[in-house]
Length: 142
Image (cartoon, rainbow, N blue to C red; front, side, top):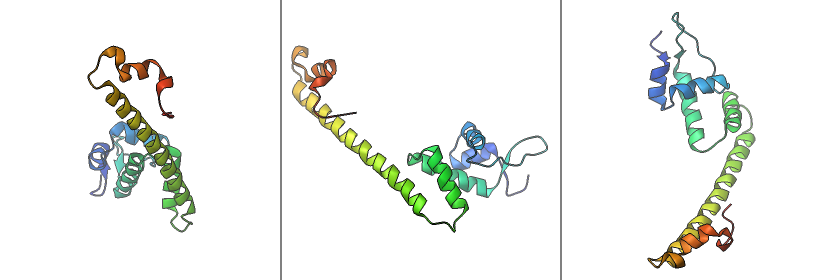
């Protein structure tokens, strides 16, 4: 092992990606299979660490594996147009916007439920009533 290579445990520590996840990324082709030592242990280089950091950050932003695969391919071929990367990011942004709208609707309904219950009797409790009969929900939360 050279000074520029790292065992899988060190890669996990440096990147914050768990060992089984690193192996999974190798298995699905997001990370190339690394060379192995004479003892059959994986060894990674600085490029692998950068690639794992990229994957981890993309996952934190909610990108799906197929989108990450495409983004990695674009990164590997920097002379291409960035239109595909832009389209992927725009699609993810639209998904986030939809999720935010659902969460805002959920928050509004929960606030309404809590306001109507306000330490009254269970028989008059909006929380129990709403959960028992979803038709009392205002707007779509799905």
